[in-house]
Image (cartoon, rainbow, N blue to C red):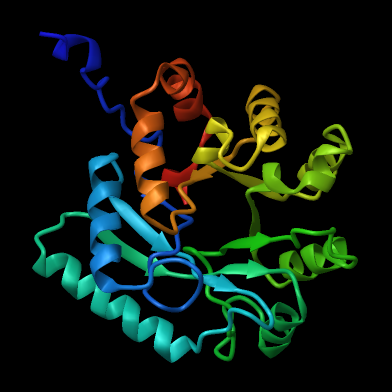
Length: 253
């Protein structure tokens, strides 16, 4: 008789149809560890309204440097398995979430965007997803940004709301990076406080001040699926869904 009070709220779709940040290529980083989970995650993203997925395993020295051949092979197998499972979601491409470090610099030295010997794999076209260090800002970040832009890339910084040292700058560094023509990809779960109160405060501040250019699930595991599902059914998400739809550019890449 009390089922009414416990009825789930309607699942609202994510504010984008192209996922540009997820870790669902099996056994290449700290994300998915099996094809079975990756299929489950893709099915969940499909349920959340996503139509196309660009996979972005970590590229971080020295911890996550899976070979290109391994990543490509597992991407192709996952793509085939998704079709076999009857999923309509398009496994559009595999790129990387590139940490700005010596490994990325080495790749950049091999060739510019469009060169035959280029070793960097963008999301699509010239768009490149990069990330900063967690503990402290990379000392040559500005230099590498300019280098990569000169090489022809359009840069998207992953989850800037999670870099606590940026929060301590009261938004000034977001403005600095924006002035350098860097765009920002925030994580959907930051709006829930999943990464901490500071991250939640900063992502709402970024949304209110026009700094949220892209969104991503940054999906790694089962918990992420459950928490995203819960958030998409929440009053908090319903309040900002239309604003997010107007703000994010995932589908324009």
